[in-house]
Length: 531
Image (cartoon, rainbow, N blue to C red; front, side, top):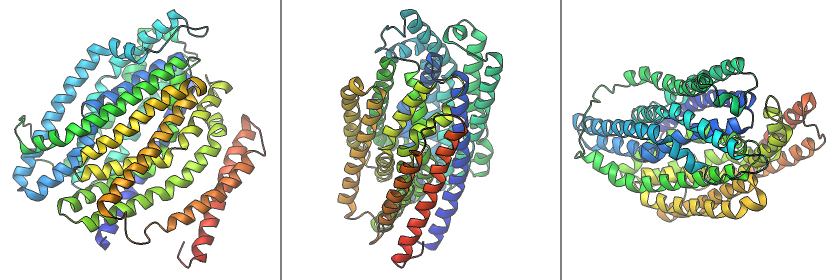
């Protein structure tokens, strides 16, 4: 890696990491406010399910294909064609994407009742879920999904804009604009709490105005997020993008060819997620989908803050090295990126596993959530954390394969991972409940990551320069030392609420962090390398 590339990568990662960190902090606040206002309840389940569907459908329709193929194809066109011809091709791709997004939004709006019926197919009446409540949940979720359906279109515009900015090596703005979305949603939820301090499923179902406030307010956040990306796009010299609808452009054909496999594995992803959410609904109790949704949001934080920033910065360079046939440079960049990801994910997984239950009790143990519900959410987070490293490595491998235009290999990896997820989910949900669903996800991603690394290694014969991964031994040993300290300190107290719980969680985290830093510095000095 040249010094220029190192400097550029460092600046890009720094900007993205800062923006993503602030975005994720506001995202956590959004989850906390959502849990405080709606709790872990049937109403929260209706909201969270309806708000998840647009993301899923966006990914199926175009999102996965867009992220996987647009940047490599755009960079290839700019590298191998004239500037004029390249932007004509890019315009054709962007135009087609906008048309598809608009169509998907309309279809979702019309088909909302049938979509919700499919997601709640495993529901059954029980002592804590009557047929009337099930019908009300479906009705509320359907109404909210109709309000949320425009998110598909605006999520698509955001992804297209981010791809165009990444081509110009501008990475920061897409990581910063989600903050506005979170702020708008937080404001809407707090206003809703003022209107209805103790919302119930039946009460909100009987109030179209309250449903409209939740639905329109949430979608408004995505619209504001998309609007705030416009200034960065205008400064990125993208003036040659025009409305150009044609299916015969070479770039459209390339994306269609590459995207066919990508569409396949994106569809597999959403089928697996559908099974997880449907089985979660079928578990019963108060707010099972919300418990899983909240836990998954906290599980993804380390990945979203650090790993996504690294992968977004590395992807254009990987695409360039592949386009220019620079296999050695590709392997070196892949290795340094993988090392950077693991340095953070290994200790983060230890912290999440050990502090999941008291941490969730601290963050969500108030408002409309009771102790049993937060305990359930903490257990799910602990099980998911077992697969944090595997999840992150798997996503990184998939990105690398996509930049190499090897979507077929990515498809087979996803096929194995998702098939294992579905199989384990059905096997484990009966004896373990929601924890079994989380464990199925953790195991499947870990297996997929190992298989993915084998594929990359078989391609290059190595995963980086000699000695690239030697620092990871220090990271693992330091993480073990940190884990032991956190385990001991967190079990000195059984506090489950109040200041004592705060001291338990924060004290364990701070002391454990200091032990980690001390251990890794000691090991670095012992080996004669700078810490």
